Every structure is written in C-alpha cells, then in structure tokens.
Length: 265
Image: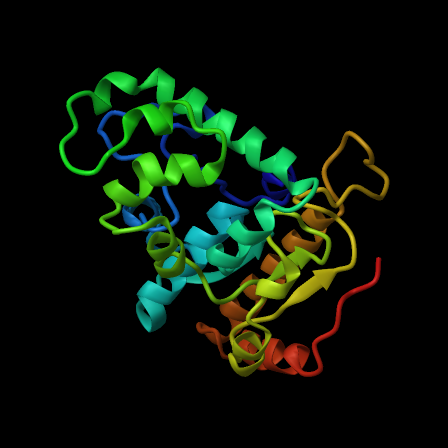
C-alpha cells in the first residue's frame, strides 16, 4: 500500500509500534491495545510538520484496534480527515475466546513466540520490576494471554487480563473477513457502526487474517484490498478539498451503511 500511495503522489509515514519492525524499545513499556500515547505523538508530529495537509490513517489487526480507539478518544477533535481499519478484532474478550479454538491455536502460539522474541531483546529493561509483573511467564509465554497476564495488563494498570481486554476493545471498523481467526465476525458491533454516519463496514466472506490474496498481483503481490483502500482515501480527499470538512463523506458513509451485508468477492 505504501508503494501504491507514493505512486499516486501521497506523502507516506509508516508507524511501527514499539518493538515491531525492528524499532527499539527504550523504556519498560511495550505496545498494547490500551496504549495510545505513541499514536497521539505520531499524529501530532506529522500534523505539525505538514499543517496544511489532510491526514489519513490505515491500521491493521491490533493496530486497527488501536487506531479506532484513538479516533474514539479524540472524537470531534480528531485531526484525521479519515481512516481505514482492517481486520480489527473489535472485542478483545471475544477474540481471546476464539483464539483458543481449533486451528486458531496455531496463530495464538505463533504470536506468542513473536512477543517473546521481542521481549527477549529488551529483557534488561524489565529487570527488578516491582508490582504484579510475572516476567518469567511473559518471557516463556505459550499464548498471547500468558504474555498479557505476565506483562501487558500489569503495565497498563489492569487487575486482570479480561479487564484489560474489555477496556482496550474498539467499537468501529471498516473492513474484515468473515473467516478471520483473529478478528472474529461475531465481535463486529454492527448496530453501532450502522448508526454512526461516519462509519462504513465491509465484510468479505473469505480472506482470513490480512490475506485478501487475489487479482493480478496474486499470490506474492499486494492484496486486492490495497487499491480499494486507496480509492476510498482518494474519495475522502476529493470531498475534503471541496467541502473543507467531512460532511460529504458522512452522507456517503451513512448511505452506504444502510442494509449492511457481506461483500462477495
């Protein structure tokens, strides 16, 4: 998507959460679904550097959850002119329940190994941590829930993992697949999205988690959703340049959200 956006003349900023994409962790604070500080900082920095530009954001998976929570926190004062949320898990309590069912365990274990790998690179930052931290559990986590129990929920100030999941869930989204093992379809807050004129929901019957592989660039190229997302953002930019606001897009989104149905591909 970055390449497609640059080819269309867009300035692109890539924000990797702490420890992801080889970005360093310099304080004992990992990225999490509840932590919005870095997102706020990035948006403020980009906005200050390009004060005349309209800002748009795209988030994937847990990043989509963080993005939508940021939108909700900023509400009418949000500096973004539009956003796209892909494969958002919405309700982290439900996502956690489904994570432990059948083949989904494979994804759970893989993500747990990835978290442990990031943690091991920065383990010295977490030595002699006081409070309820369970560093051995986090360092040897066999599931995402183990890692969140040992580290994430404590650093986020929650008494339990379920409290952390419940309070860190988002409520709106743009696009996900009905057979997504990580972002379950049953967690979609359909009525909330339908009633919000600034939201539009697209659910595809297939695609798994971030695997919308089809079209001319399949199977190794970009997913077919990349140009769809770019077309949507370009539409928002055209409307923003005409109206200097979001009213054009609100009316379009409200019209599109009536009678929501999965999109067959």
